[in-house]
Image (cartoon, rainbow, N blue to C red; front, top):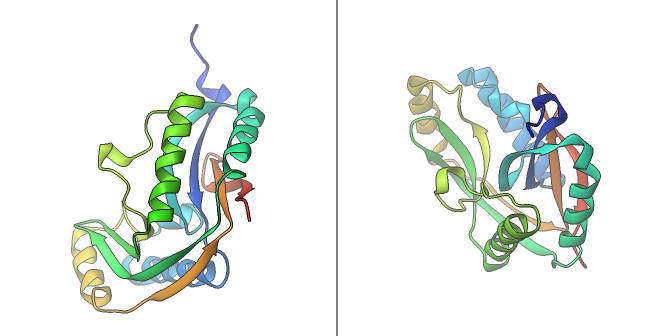
Length: 187
């Protein structure tokens, strides 16, 4: 049986930072659009990807939400620390996330849950493993602009800490990614 592509949508799972970090990151995304002509990152809210985009049948969306809500409710809240800027040369500039056992464990457990319970196998980008970050500029950042921007940002500081009290399921509406459901973590 073939599935009609129109009956599917794209989703991904992420941590969306709360205010004021959310607004600060969004402001930086706008800066990259204005100064470096890179606007692709504005197609999604600031976030840390926990599971890469995947296709899912729209008629099974409620089940997906229910499964992820159940998963999230069993996980503890924790702190995340953002520490400056970094890059994936020659296209991506991002806010760096300090590695933590709690964050790594959440992503590892989510990846396992998605594989076993949801039959999803693409948790990581090109099997490169988990590298938490908040993208500011990517895909449409041209190489010459990347090097100018990286020269500006490589020594800049950015420090913030926030409590992760939920994860989010995002859905692509055909143009941009929007938060479909916020899934609270246990207290």
